Structure formats: C-alpha cells, structure tokens
Image (tube, rainbow, N blue to C red; front, side, top):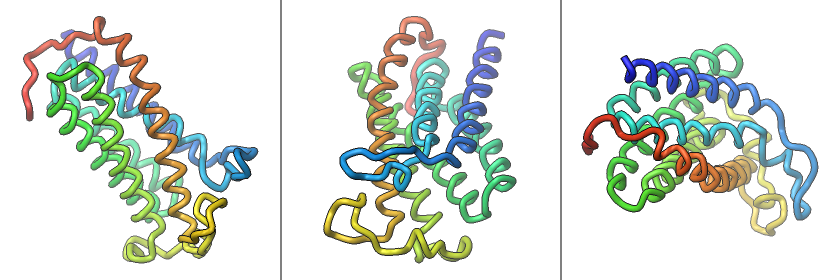
Length: 211
C-alpha cells in the first residue's frame, strides 16, 4: 500500500534525524562570531534536529495528524533508547520530553493553520514547537529547580554574561538555550525551501481534519 510505504520512509527518516542529532550533539562548533565562542553555545546537533519538524510537517500534510503522531512516537522510542545508552538519565529525560512535546505541538499548530497560506503552517508549527522543545530540554536538563531528574551541573548553573557578551549575567545554560533556539529559527526558515519544493509532489492523500 502506498500509505504504508510512505509511512515507513517517513519513520526511517525521522529515526535517522534523531540518531544523527544525538550523535552530533556531542560536537561543539569551533571558532567565534562577533567575539562569541561558538563552542560555548552550540553543537552540530542544533543544525540537524530541526529537520525533524520538516518530516513531521510533510507527514501531516500528506496523511494527517494521526499518521504524523505515529511517526513522532517512532522517533521518540528510538531517541529515548539511544539517549539512555549514550547520556545521563537526566539528559535522556529532557531530550525525550522535549522532542515528544515539541513535535506534538507542531502537529497541533500545523493543523490549525493548514488551510491558510502554504508557508504559515510549517513555519509557525516548527517555530512554536521549537520554542517549547528548547524550553523543556534546557530547563529539565540544567535548571536547578528540576534537580528531581538528576544531579545539577555546576558549570551549567554558573553565572556568566548572557551569550558571553552582555553585561547582564544568568546561568550559563540560558545562553546555551538562546543559541540553540536562534539556530532553530534560522533552520526553520531554511526548511521552507524543501517544504515548498515538495508540496506539489507530496499531495494530501486524505481530506485534512483538525485532530
């Protein structure tokens, strides 16, 4: 069946993105920009993870929210399993929670906007989903108030100038979150290009429903 074939393809792509992002998050960027040490703010995983929103949105457009959720859950199972093997339990909890809730919010926003201009649903879905994803991950992983999930990271909680350049200080993990979300905003805009290019190829195969 055509739907089954596409579902398997989307699931495989989502799995590859999750695996790649979990691997690349171990490698900070090198160099600096405007005096900011990029390695203190970003890893290469920040550039690959937003592709997950593109996969979710294409699935949602073609088959609807129910199938999109199945693809998201498949990526969730793989991502959580890998995270518990390769990272501390607190990071695994943060990663899995952020991914699942961010992607499900993306689906809900996409459904609400899918009948408007073609770019609104994928753009706002991914950006709002990314905002929730970033907030949950960095809060659960590093904020002192979520120590219930595991030991605090003293380096992450250390006060430092925001983004390394502003006079106002905040826990270091907040600068990491700002840097991460900034990249997600940029990549979210770039992902409109492949989404727009594939719109005429991956046409909806069932009437859209807000579910």
